[in-house]
Image 1 (cartoon, rainbow, N blue to C red):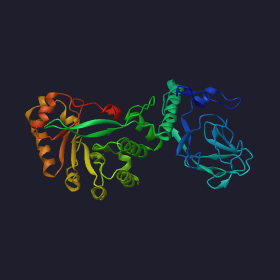
Image 2 (image 1 turned 180 degrees about the vertical axis):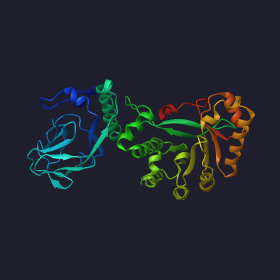
Image 3 (image 1 turned 30 degrees about the horizontal axis):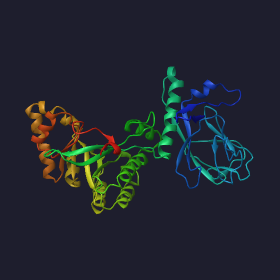
Length: 382
């Protein structure tokens, strides 16, 4: 199973059933998880079935220890046969149930099945891991460790928001900060690594929401909390919960200036966007379209939705001061178009004085990029 050393490192000590080839367990092409709350008042967790057999019970040495009095000492066990997952009740007092049916004999369980150990319920999840034959052992273990670390990330809310300044090009003053996803956990430091792990478990929206909440929480103690530009994930537009999460942010601080960023490619339903826009207005929260110009610009949506900010993709900004006149005129026309619909144009990815000067000349009002400051934790912004 996966154990944690005193230093916090995740260690691998795989258990196998008697007579079973240890290498076979390590070369499996999938990882099984249980999603639920081991403690009734605790957070939702995603627990890797990382030993074989995987014992569930009240005993502290069980693979999954459930402190509920209704759970037997060793209540049940799960066995990964390689082809499927089989549940065995171990003579528990209050029973083990699969989708509401008591498991008297061994039962094969599938992804999305609901297992109840007495009154403690978990959803079964299966994550397929792609790998080549030559690196099967290493890939399965590495990816499994990442998923176990992700469970720790979510359970401990171990995200560390980083803040990148957004400046007024006219005087260089900082007008706000974009919040970017980071963590201090090994293998999950970058936003790409975190959201890649989240995607395997369908938790991109939950991770995105956690990052926004953490950023607002961190800045609550400020006498004048900064204007935060808070990112969304495209998955949040495909499931319910986004509006509720934004309302909870506003409830945390009624006066802090907040702006919600959305990638313009993720906007596929103008009617839904307009409804969201009205909700944001009612909450006094701004809207920014991110990465504008990266591919096909959503001009009709821009006109209909009227965001406060239009963030131009860095591909349009990179070396713009050295670009031919045609490209500069194109960028200038897009900047003017943003102004015409009431949006403030913002240049992303500025890395040099030449780019800064060119963007100011082309009509940009705001900018961000390494030239003005790299993303840093809150403690490093003062």
